Structures are given as C-alpha cells and as structure tokens.
Length: 120
Image 1 (cartoon, rainbow, N blue to C red):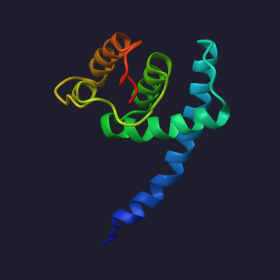
Image 2 (cartoon, rainbow, N blue to C red):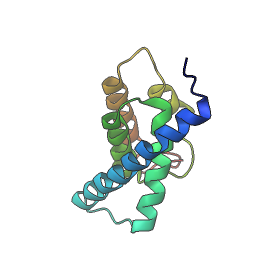
Image 3 (cartoon, helix red, strand yellow):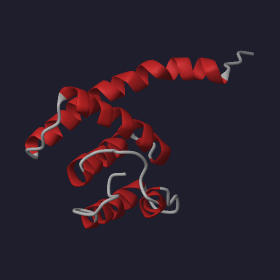
C-alpha cells in the first residue's frame, strides 16, 4: 500500500498553488487597471500573496478566491493585516455558500469606505 505523508502532499500541491498565484496576479492586474487604481507591480504582488493566503482560509475554489481578492483590492484598497471580527464572521460562515458569503462581504466592504479598519 502506498502511503503519502502530509509533507509530500504539500510538495505536490506547491507547484499548482504557485501557478494559481501567477494567474491571480495577472487577473488582479487587469482588475485594478480597469478600475483606474494604481498599484506598482511589487505592491500588487504583495497584496496578491496576502489575498491568496487569506482566501485559502475561507474558500475552496480559485474563482471564489479571485473574487475575494477583487473585493479587497477594489473596495478596501488592499490588505494591511487581518480583517476585523465582523468581516471574519461573514467570510467564515460555513452555513452559507461561498457566493453568498462573498456578496455579504462585498456589501460589508462597501460600508467601510472612508473608515479606518476596513482593510486592516
């Protein structure tokens, strides 16, 4: 019987994750450019890394993680740390489908414009 250890599974998944990060960076560049937002390549890469790490806590599909990143970049201006408890509650509500959580999060993010702590 073949046994694969957790470290081996992570090593197998790492190239796929890097590929998704590369594609997500391209997607986010198009998104912020369309919105007229200004991020240097280095700034955007940093935000995408943070978004991917955070998105993996809440979502299972590339599409949902990409949408989450779009919302944070466009509506909140990016990541400056962790989200406040109310945002975490919205994102982590496992009883709701991902699309509903994203919609609720987008509404919440929109209500944070001009407030401190929206993208903490």
